[in-house]
Image (cartoon, rainbow, N blue to C red; front, side, top):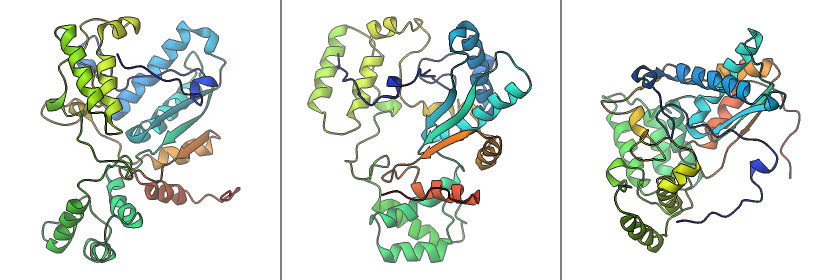
Length: 311
């Protein structure tokens, strides 16, 4: 069994944290009826608001605690909506009232899928593509890379060259080794069968522990261990296998997640006018959600700077 090392800087040192598997059918979350497995992005955020108030009803000792909503990556699309729904519920008098103070988002998607337009700017700034290709992309594509017109062959060719040049880049951290996607369902280890089989696979994982993403393989082994699931009070039979990223909920013929909101900047603007605090932070080596996108939408709010860059 993989062993964990305590993080002395963990948020749990200073706060009570509810780790929520959301939306339904991710992590260990599940529904008791088939209807609940079909939802839009707004509906799944409504489920979070409903869950939170029910949880506080069951744990009233936490009702007075200052409450913040947080998430990272694609959760950047959900967190502002969830925060807005909680705020709306408080205004409407929904019980119990949540002592909402604000929200936190790390490397968050904000305008989907337009965030991909910043991949090329990021890669050029990091020296991952040539000046010549970057200038050609700017000239031929004019900043639009998510929906290239079929007749714009020059842009299509440039974009194809760009994808070829960056195909072996670790999109989560460009300075770390590129590794295959271990969350691909075709590569998921079967976590059923005899314990001997699990032990053999763990030994194999330890020998192949070369990539930064190998912790995910260990995590998958740990999360699918029956003793771990029993300790976490996971109900037996609710999932076939724990998977870090369930891409099938929004892709493929059996997807059950429908996007209706593609831009959450208006949510940020509205929440800020209501006085809620927000912390938006972005790593500078993240190719998937480049920091340039974060800078751009924050600047679009046209707020004045009270405290400039610090040394």
